[in-house]
Length: 165
Image (cartoon, rainbow, N blue to C red):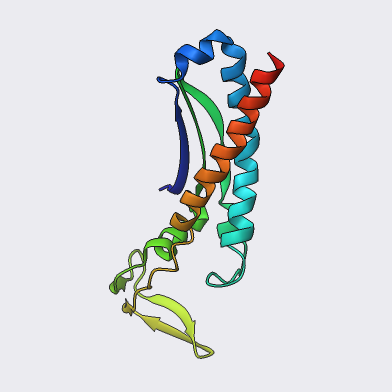
């Protein structure tokens, strides 16, 4: 299960006519720039949203799950890229972002659950999970901020490319 995929989709339909005047080099330069921005965005997410409160860093698993997705052409007028998080062993990032309602956890494949509580090993056939409140929207709060930053960086790259042509 993947969560927290911040996807950047550039739809060039309105600009396509003008961009074709400069040839495919501008479009390719945009793809290269986007490819360079995604690792920077992943780093920003880790530093600004996954360090300290409200998400106390313990193992770094969630931070390591934040990975850039290489830019690709979805069509002749669309470049798609992004950053994703909370996949694999960091599946709990979804619960931290969205919260979880209280629910029953039952043993499956074993006769009992086993865990440490108050320094003692405890066995139970089921436990009631108290649920989690939403953790300040660490992912969703980054989306709007990131979109503005990416747009500004991309605009600078396009302006430079047009000046060079």
